[in-house]
Length: 165
Image 1 (cartoon, rainbow, N blue to C red):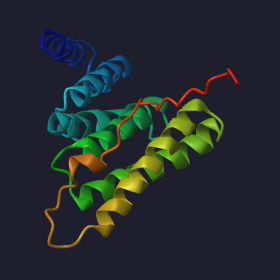
Image 2: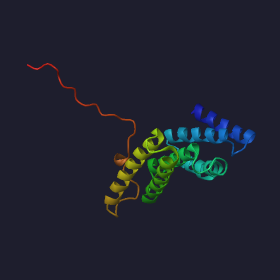
Image 3: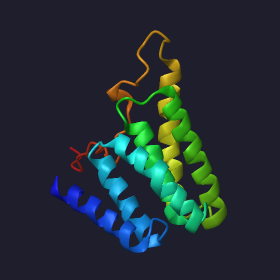
Image 4: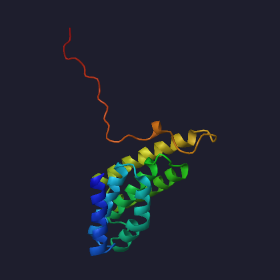
């Protein structure tokens, strides 16, 4: 995909020009991780976030900065959405999200839209872990695709006819 190639190149140029800890570089990297997750390149997301982006963000922006929290959420998403995720991956993803929610509530408040989105994501993750815990031990470790959350789908309610005969 050409857009992904360009995003990787832009990120590399920002690292070279501004340094890994510059906020613009971290933002560019965060945008890259969103694209990687959308293309189901979860392993690359996990490596990039863990090895480069989160250490740089914590060092230069702090653990409570919105961008640092978004990186943590992107890592959590990669852990839970990966087809090969394990129970440990889901536990790590949930632990990350609980920390993110706690920080978002403290820094931005409980009614902030990003706090509410993080809480919704954590609730989905909690349901996934409940499904995983109910699976027999002899089943394979990854969760079946049918139990993964599908985001941004809205079910339409059946419309009722207004004509009363």
